[in-house]
Image 1 (cartoon, rainbow, N blue to C red):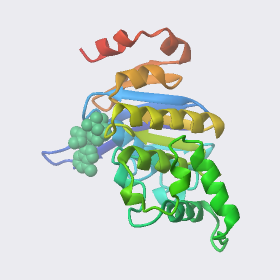
Image 2 (cartoon, rainbow, N blue to C red):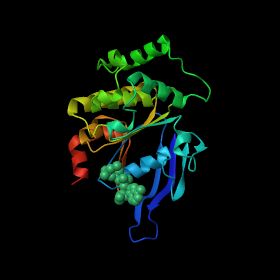
Image 3 (cartoon, rainbow, N blue to C red):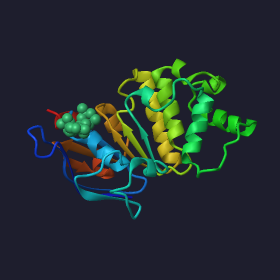
Image 4 (spheres, rainbow, N blue to C red):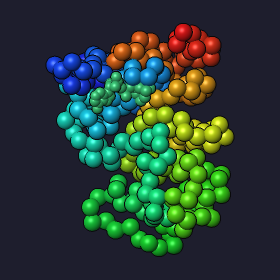
Length: 249
Ligand SMILES: Nc1ncnc2c1ncn2[C@@H]1O[C@H](COP(=O)(O)OP(=O)(O)OP(=O)(O)O)[C@@H](O)[C@H]1O
Ligand SMILES: [Mg+2]
């Protein structure tokens, strides 16, 4: 459960360029809920995700994740259980390293200090098996450098890597914006499967209204740092894709 209470984020406070990016948000996201966020450019979506991830802290208000007040907890201390995928396929992985080494790094990141990760066949096979679920044939290329893969391939792998054993929350900020339609579908399908299989609580920001319509079991519309609409699973289910377009007209 993620509970966001009276959260404000003001940038450049008191200056002429002050921005109230998040302006008094109250939001309770249930465990295993898959929340979709839509809204115009600059409406505060990424800022809200940054606040949940801990890469920025709120000007006021508080954020609780599973009964733990994380308001002042920096992102690296949340990263064990909060995974994040960005719009840019380059930002999630190390280009110079092989797929296998990237998986090794991702595994180390979420393990307690001192626990070594064997560079053995077992680990290799686990990685291969995991990658094969993507259906992209990448399990045969685990020694290949990450930088040589397409954006869609990288993004799918980033997703897979980010969801390690302790992960409880998955934050997706326009993960398919830089991808062609086919790759975008692979990435979204992978995300949906991981969210289901790992029973994650997830937040997806998207400008793709078809994805907003297709995925998730709750949808909110953000505008000027506030929640303007909030539809639960039943209401979202009854929504037509055209209704979503109307939200923006
Ligand atoms: N670090 C920052 N310093 C100053 N202003 C910022 C900062 N980060 C975001 N903002 C401002 O806060 C507002 C909300 O930005 P945010 O990135 O959250 O919007 P968004 O809804 O994610 O937009 P988009 O759909 O374009 O990604 C914008 O006006 C933006 O310029
Ligand atoms: Mg954004």
